[in-house]
Image 1 (cartoon, rainbow over the protein chains, first blue to last red):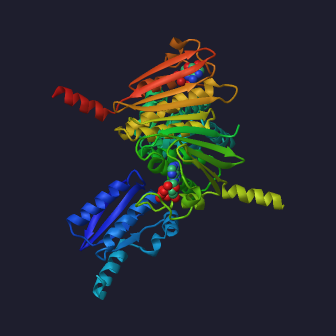
Image 2: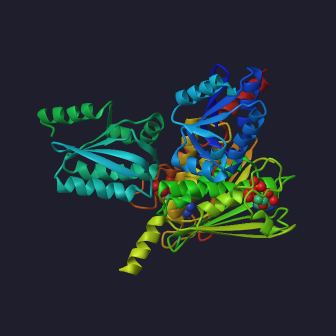
Image 3: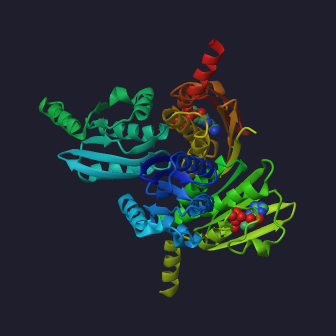
Length: 120
Length: 120
Length: 148
Length: 148
Ligand SMILES: Nc1ncnc2c1ncn2[C@@H]1O[C@H](COP(=O)(O)OP(=O)(O)O)[C@@H](O)[C@H]1O
Ligand SMILES: Nc1ncnc2c1ncn2[C@@H]1O[C@H](COP(=O)(O)OP(=O)(O)O)[C@@H](O)[C@H]1O
């Protein structure tokens, strides 16, 4: 697995490339945590268009980040779920707490709008 | 393995997609033989750009077609060899009897030119 | 002879991918469509990850994987000789996990993505999971035949 | 523990691809570059194809594949219990084949693409081929270390 990233105001946009399973979950957690801590970012947009595989351990790693950000009212927003990925997110219940957006741009807009609305 | 094809005058242009090994060599042989017999074609251009793998059994299948066409002065011309494929062709000696061309177009031109030169 | 293959791996996390790819390559020769193959990948990943995390928590052990074609369907058996399971009924509950930070979703995914599965275990002896899936195309064909 | 895996297959032509993909997925965790991985695929394909064609010419038999990481290099053993080889020196000659229409290039490719290989056989007992390859990156690193 490889992650490429982009920072927009207080948002980390992370694009996951390859497989997110028990072999790469630790790398995912370390990358996201250190990037967001270092730059004091609040929200995480995950672009999963190039993600080739995810299982419950990968979902667990994403849920872990969610719990972490939640404490400071940070959000995780999802982009680019293919049908199978969408199904595992849905079965796991994660789609109830993280919303999907049609593009990174739309997701960024949603974060900014929520802020103006005063919800940080 | 999957083959897509194209006929230009008396030439079969075959694009091989996937793996050419002992599991697909028979399909390759049957496809090329029946197409060329049916349409009475003399020359074969093999576009290998989308070929993901070849081993000595795959090379043997190509050599078999060469021997077959040679009887009637037919030629095999190669297009789109990646470095590893080029190396196995070279080690096997097949590059001594089949020439490589930079594009299907160039290969077609070469066949037509040879014909005007009277070599059929 | 119907196709069949066996594999033996060490419970390293990098081998979860190897198990997944080997089984899905085997399965690709049956009549599954792409999303069924993805489902098989998830199921194998969950079962093998469980061996790595739960069966051998303190040291590395062996994982045995058997794949078989039975009546055009796929049968997979994944076996470890690790710690085993105390209470099978409990672990089959969705969201139940004996490990903190784990979602307890592995067996639920296997249940969703395969036609059938069986979990066999004895504490201290190890665990065996058997899974079965028939391609939708074959099911349809067999149904059409029996209807007409 | 160094990584290690074992596989058992039936000598069907569709399993040649399964063997290739499994070994190359195992090898991808070592430090090989992409063209070295392609070379390993060819070598495995040749050895397994030989089992299917030569070792078991009349019926299906078992093929055993072992892969091991040894000092950051890859060791592969491919074994059959088929007809075996009468004259090992003869078959090691490039372009030598006991089957019409075959190029006799399989062992020559294994020789070109792997650092080392050994062919062991007894007529009527079966054949074992062992192959070894160290990633160029590791060779270079080990050389740099010993030079400086
Ligand atoms: N191979 C195994 N060996 C020992 N225990 C297992 C094994 N597989 C599953 N379990 C037990 O079943 C529980 C539920 O498994 P699962 O649904 O995959 O969720 P998770 O792996 O997230 O805990 C695990 O927490 C573990 O206690
Ligand atoms: N596993 C095997 N069992 C029996 N004979 C074998 C085996 N592998 C190789 N051989 C013998 O070695 C010869 C040379 O093999 P190879 O170089 O791969 O060329 P080819 O497969 O084209 O004949 C074969 O023709 C066969 O007689």
